[in-house]
Image (cartoon, rainbow, N blue to C red; front, side, top):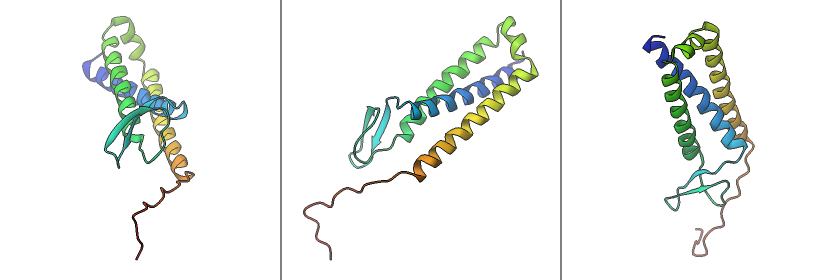
Length: 131
């Protein structure tokens, strides 16, 4: 398998694993880093109370998993026995299609989650005087 094909396969595997980990971490409520913008702090948790964002932490976890899987696929594709399997046109196309489907599921999951979210605003501070 040529190096350019190995790089392409590694990218496809990384994209697929990114999508799977991103969706699984959201549905499975894995502990991920949450950012609290008002307190300027991070917390590793499954669920939080207060104003916090999980997108940055969830993306980082999925990106690290995808990069590890892509690097592993690149290394394994160098072996002659694996190269024969990975060189099949149908295998690479299947990995590409699965990665695209997973990415679309991630986007649809977040659209649905954000569209149906009901946010309860925090109470006004006691010192606030409306004019």
